[in-house]
Amino acid sequence: MTSNEIQRDRAILTGIDAESWEHPADRAALAALRRLPVFDEVLRTVFGIFGEKPIRLAFQANAVRVSEKQFPSVHARYLEVLETMDAPEHYPLFVSQTPMVNAGAYGMERPFIVLNSGALRLLDDRELVFLMGHELGHVMSGHVLYRTMMVILIQLANMGHPIVGLAARAVLVGLLEWYRKSELSSDRAGLLACQDPQVALATSMKMAGGGRPDETDLNEFLAQADEYRESGDVADTVFKVLNLLGATHPFHTLRAAELRDWVEAGDYDRILRGEYQRRGDPRRPYLDDLEAASRSYTEEAKDFFNQLATGALDAAEKMRQAFAETLRNR
Image (cartoon, helix red, strand yellow):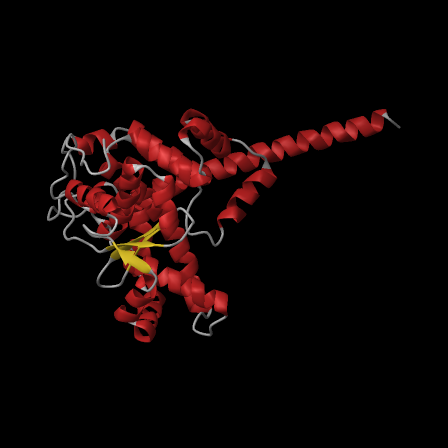
């Protein structure tokens, strides 16, 4: 496919509701945040200080708006994404001169998407479709308001601004945990946009380590993800938790494994067959989200404590062996 062609053999997901692809822990965590009184208070404070227009200007000050005349190939791919996902509107897309391979969706009342120029250099057309679909997923899921507030709070906290007191810091911790889950949701949206699991998983691999196709192997990358999820002693498990503290994104290896699991569970194929929630359909009850999220977190906790138990047994056995060796050498 040339850079100016648009994929024709794809399912148009007419009227699809973001609930169709959202991770249950994402929905429940965000719903829980919205129910915190201190959350509304912090949100109103940030709104009052910054407002919509300054936020837009700050993010767009050093970026180029994508159109038929500016980055026309990216524009063609973006139109494809908007059509495939049946987006409610054409959200502005920008390219920023930033070497790091990434993108973001921002805004308060008027969302927009920013692609880092590094992504255009590393990703091919279909991988770029996945990335733009991922960011569109954030917009359609209503993530951008809270994502923008999180970015602002992180920047203010790094500056030592007095507005980031205990209440705001508590909200920021909650936002970071929710946003890591929201990335899992938007990876699914990206896959629905590109409609090729190999492309979606390869994009995660490229964003994890860069590299050309002839330098990497997707099966090896997924095996690496499984090894990370399943192995480790007590110290490894603790460091896995510490590594995520303060992070906005889960690790790309784990995201790829989560996306592969979603595909293998059959949900991706069901959506392509047209079996999905549509905008205007009755919403899933909040308690159902909590139950689904509870199952998700329970599995994570079970894995965590299983690793702790295994690690503790291994540590005890090593200590026993070391003690026995010491006695033999006396």
